[in-house]
Length: 187
Image (cartoon, rainbow, N blue to C red; front, side, top):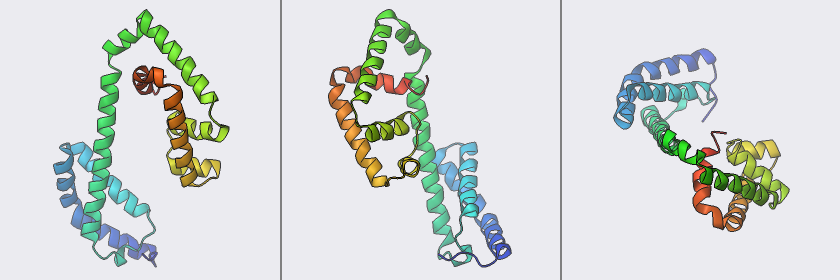
């Protein structure tokens, strides 16, 4: 797609698209999400991304199809995020927090922390750095690649290597490790 020739022309096309499609997209997002506020946020995010993009909106062949697909993708991301939040809430419920405070659980938790730290230290430096940026700093592969000045493909290879080695090293702790990974964000 071409870059818009004039900012005022681009703004006029954007405004026309917004007025024409916003109500329809809002209904569509609501049908997907079953939540009015999330639907409105989803549509606004799509239009915001469109506004921030450099594409020539006048050259967009099928704006309606493009906008519907964008809303669909954004809505699916919202649903995925909602599911992750629900899993986290279920795992980090007060009842489970109390169980974790139980002395035997606490000892296992401390033991696991030591084992994870030792396992991480066994990874090659770059591999460990990539893993920590991904899991502890919650960076996306592209962000890690930019920060470390390596390719996204290299980041993926380091993550696969790290996860395989950690799975092998920590095989005795896998049931407890799964629970701990959900709590790691909390600390």
